Image (cartoon, rainbow, N blue to C red):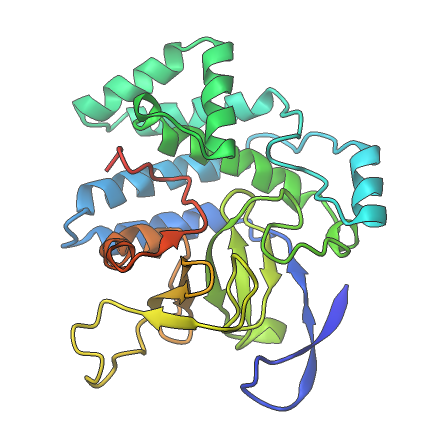
Length: 310
């Protein structure tokens, strides 16, 4: 369903733009794999970014290997009537096929894995259903343990495939009435980052990108994606000299809020057409350290990384 939206002050005209964009790109994970591989060259975290490229290739294969599970009619009705996410990450009864997605990803990565990574993959492949589900519950709740660290990127990747497939099976009308602007209207998860799009009805608009199901939803610029405040929102980047030519034009910046002391990355396709909110987020962890030192806490997760796994 299209909604009239002012274009964030960039022009004074009104145009039709989608409030919610469901994940319909059939090559989503392939494109991310290519971006990870590109970013890995010469990067201090090149080995990890290269590993995530392999994970994304496994995600792409898993995505096309099975159909979405049926979404309960009651959940869709509650979403339409009461604005509730129809696939709440922490309340949705996951179908067992998410574990099939996990096995596909693990086996795809296992073929060329380094010994330390192979050990983690074999551990997950041998794990019984209950402990795997327990790790998944902790990933979705944001309460993972240090012992989970090595498993988080792989479990998180499988959960992304499962929830993305489920989200793609919905219609925009099923989620168009969800009014909590700071969480995903499909699964209730926080965004991994926000993105300024180019081209089409979304051009020059800021969309939040779900860390789990890849649904995007519109939020006007210079508004905190955590508390909704329009006061004290400012941007930080890795540019050493803030007055240098090109500073402030970085493709990846941190949008920080003085009101709630949180931040989230903002990636801009008009600065780099191939920027990816997940891959470029991991490739700019130095920016997270910078913003953290200034007293801001990150408001949304990247399920392909755990602080103890890098």
